[in-house]
Length: 416
Image (cartoon, rainbow, N blue to C red):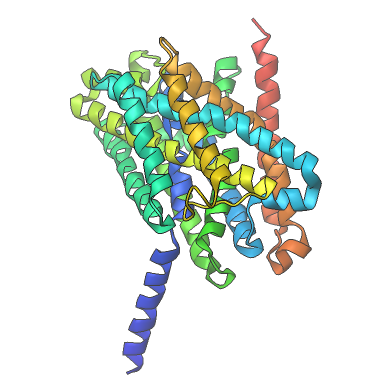
């Protein structure tokens, strides 16, 4: 009888975990979007394994920062923009939202750039398929009445990221050298190296992630007593993101870097893989680019709509309909139109859009992290769930590293 109760209790905990997970995994996996894939591909083709040390540092920081964001949402029951408005006033809220808007518009455009590039790899016109995919993305969020249904679609799309792991194994990288570069950093005093490093920072931890993760946890109605499951969700998502990013870098480092092929986009990486690792690797890379771009094109407009409505007090939520949350769905619609419409502009340099978007994220990220750090240390909001000294130290160090890289990049840009 006792054994039966233990088994039943265990199954209840497992079912509870699977009912709660989603926000952490979706947010993290969506982070490996079109711009992220482009950035990691460029890092591997231009600098081999030399930037893996930075990726490992950023994934560790990502676990800490995403856990902070999830804790802030679960304990307070409010989104990040909501908390900024209540605690710092309208002026600072406007700064945070403008920061997010600048970053999100550029990244949304880069998501549709990834969708366009993935279709062009198969010889299909972006002028037909980008509008079609944009409509499907809009339809699923605006017309599907349940958040759980939308979340399941997101999770299913996230699973396709495994294609990058398979492509990385096929590429047969030098695992020993990769491990060495993770442990022993290699720093190159070159503005392209610093630019790529900032892009890696900007694509690994982004301003939109903090807003979306917190908003989706609030929208889902997660209780504080179940927070341990949310924490596990965040950790799994962050580690999965790191593994996928690692394999994208080592795939490019193992195949393109030795040949001196310095690609400028994820689509070029896919094309270059064909003669070096076979057409199968190219197709895997292309499918991964499409799926990650689609999930990003779902989430970036949603993040913007959540943050804007939180900040100004409008009704919001995927489970609502257009009539009950018109501002929320109007912003979502406008972001999709801007993202897809910009990509249809003839001869637009898609790679430049992707990489610049990640760099903007890297430069703007400290602003959002500072707000989070101040909020999560307020006892009147968090009670016993405030940050400890280790969390505060790691977050502060991350902010300082980002600022340092940004200053070095700006300085190096003016050197010959």
